[in-house]
Image (tube, rainbow, N blue to C red; front, side, top):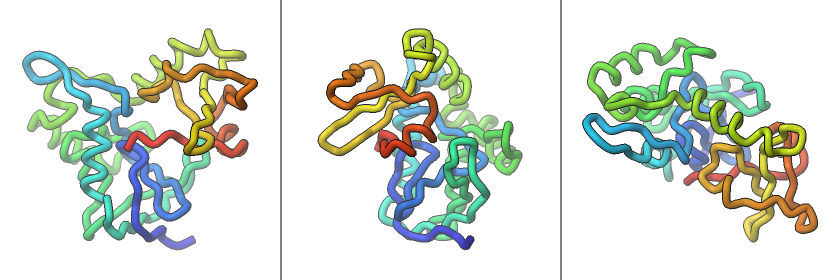
Length: 201
């Protein structure tokens, strides 16, 4: 299959939608929308929200070309994406808005090293890597979810939306089966049932 081309919409700091295709930026992992990181000296900042805003700055309203890199374990398309000839994935890591996702790819290790040396973004202070943050959030709620299925399927005026435990709105959602709301065990299950992921942007 060829490259994915079109105007991109941002889902979160490392995911975009191009046309009808949801693309996970391959080789990087950005802070989750609800995540905060420590500042260099004192206090914290909303690094997850900032990462989403930065990705939007890079792609909003622009023609994006994504080279397919297969599928992730959730069935999402992985892509290395370009806007105005610029590697968006690399830019997010180089500017300190994402980690190089070395568990799956060493493609952006050099960009991460540069951002770390310069203390940019997530490297200005202590920051929990996104994959650890997600694991902590899942572990903190799965014992209260039926069968450990901790994904919340909500129904809103905008349709059927599912929330992972690290969604900023997760705690506010009450599962009311009589209103069609439900739990899911995996993202793939939620998508197959007609739900779509919440957009942080």
